[in-house]
Amino acid sequence: MKINEWTLGLAAVGVVSLASVAQADENKLVPLMTDVASTTLSGFVDTSAIWRPGTGSDAVPVGRLYDVNSTGSSKQDGFNLNVVSLVLDKPLDEGKWSAGYHVEALVGPDANAFNSSIFGVGQNAGSLSDFALAEAYVALRAPIGNGLDFKFGQFGNFGSYETFDSYKNPNYSRSYGYYLNPHDHVGVTTTYNFAPWLSVSGGVGNAYGNPIDSKADSETSKYYMGALTVTAPESSGFLKGSTLTLSYEGGPQAQNQPAIGDGAHVQNFYAGATINTPVKEVSVGASLDYQEAPNIYARALAGYLTYAVTEKFSLNGRIDWATGDLNEYMDAVPGTFPLNIPNSVHADLLAATLTGDYKIWANVITRAELRWDHSLNDVAPFNNASTDLQRNELTLALNVIYKF
Image (cartoon, rainbow, N blue to C red; front, side):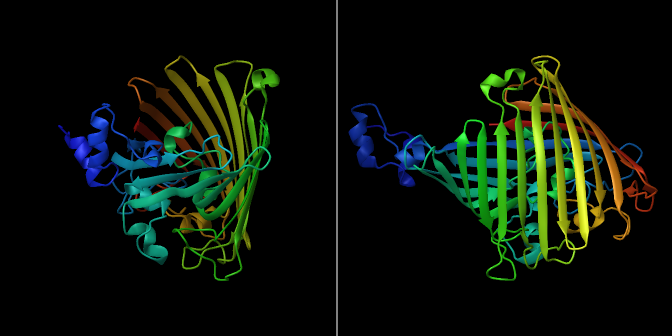
């Protein structure tokens, strides 16, 4: 019997036994463990090149996440490896009692900014390794009504128009509203689909803030979440598939982490919609994000427009506005540079973003982006050099992502 190197490798880690291989050799089949066979591997490699015209090597962008590399310096005016994502997934099946899991591991500079590293403690946890977990949970389904789905472990937030996985977003850079939302939680959630057009979710977690397993000061104080999603049914004509999501997340902030406000409770409110139009190639969207902690607040409003010019080329536009105690929030959120204004002054920012997405290679996203940020009040928050403060900020970016 001849056994290839791949089969020997599987036998070495216990996935198959040599006895089973010998038995299967007669049938020309090599059985695998069922649980392993049902797991899928996917992910992406995210790279970029960013240029800020008229600035030096110390140019510092502000107001957006993931413009920081592993050393904490700017990604501007150079080439960047953003992140590598590896996803292991066993989805729920249609059985009455179904179980699965989902793990997304992050490697690279953006893993630091995500700040859910399992290495280190306290405020240094996210800075000790270019590794983090975006999600890691056990999925369960109970045969109650239409099926009650549970997630136990680490999972994403309940309300956000944009996500960490940048290829899922219409633009390369994230909006102001994105960083107002928490990234992830550790706890338990449940989701029930009352109808194909109505889904309701609820959950409870440890606290607001990373890293993984961070707790609040009080053993009984927990973080609560809820969301409602409405999807336009088949009978809605051109609106078919349009969605509206409303969500709330609130509770204590994690101890030993950068604090928002006085470090007590924080609340997030979100409303977002994606709407199809009578023109098949055009869709629009909108989002409202509001976050508050004792004595401070911030809110952001964004509008989105997507136009599929051809089968391979699309244009994605975004206008977003933010106001409030933004400097306070940026001080507390890893991956952002604080605004150069006093905490007592309310920022009032406007950003316009245009992204062109052209599909050239299979499985590859190639897009170019122009973004302009502007201060609407007399404050000059943007840093074009170490001492040169400006009311405007202009960036050009190229984003190349391979999905597998």
